[in-house]
Length: 174
Image (cartoon, rainbow, N blue to C red; front, side):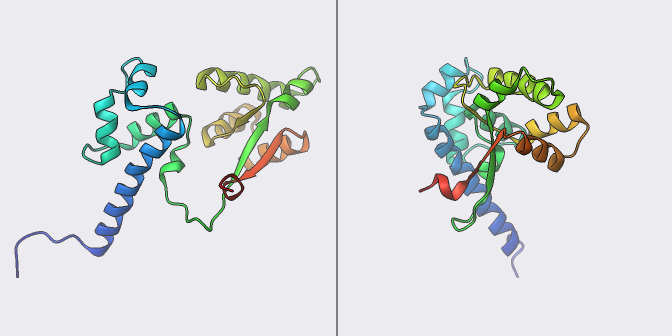
């Protein structure tokens, strides 16, 4: 019997999943249309090209905090690093900014709060296409607090006002 440490089957699986997640970072960067050097320039040096490249290769440890920040920088949700089987589809809720803008003059607290939140999010993400806004888990949390409702209730309120478009991951891949 050897004194050398042997990882368990579960540890090997977790390690393989971690490496797959790390390698997905490159896909997120490429999807954002950025080279490593452009990441460094666009982030004003916050994300160094050599460091991001090391994260992508798995030669440098990436903490959960840094992973969240990097995904946010790419405009992606942290779940993009998680495992989704090709046969699975996930519902993404997208806020219809055109409809929200059209309805914003109505005396409706839900619309007013949602419009303010959407304006702030698009400013933070530097996303001013003005047509749609993908909602992230954090966005729902803000709406839940502002409206004093659960996530399900918030989604229902937005759907009833015609403000949500539903897109599935599988429909995006075709």
